[in-house]
Image (cartoon, rainbow, N blue to C red; front, side, top):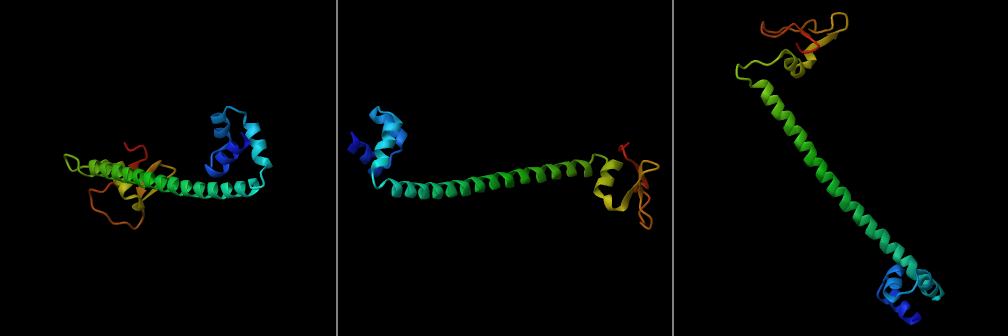
Amino acid sequence: MESKILDMYFKEKMKQIDIATKLGVSKYKVSRVIAKDPRCKEEKENRKIENKKKNIEYTKSYMKQKWANREIDNYAVVNNMHDQAVRELSGSKNHISNRAFRNWNSSIYEYNERTKFYVLKKGITVGADVPKRIDWRGV
């Protein structure tokens, strides 16, 4: 029985729990038999190194997949923003709301806390069709 346990552990590289299940003995029995063998420490170190390599490879593949999914998510977000911009900027009457106009041209407006309006910054020259002040609620 002991030689069979040792062969399964050292030659077939089986886990202790798998050996115990296959032979119908307790895991503790398998552990005691393996611990008595002089090759035990070296084998445990080798298995630790192998598991560390496997873990590194798994982590790399997981992160690659995560970044690939993130790129897909970013693409979807940008695509959604583009679709929204198209809807705002190409209305049937070629008219966009004041709020959409302010969002697209936010650098020319500043918020006036007293009046609760976005107002055109001083020194900005614009055409007659550009709103000079915009209600913050977008009305």
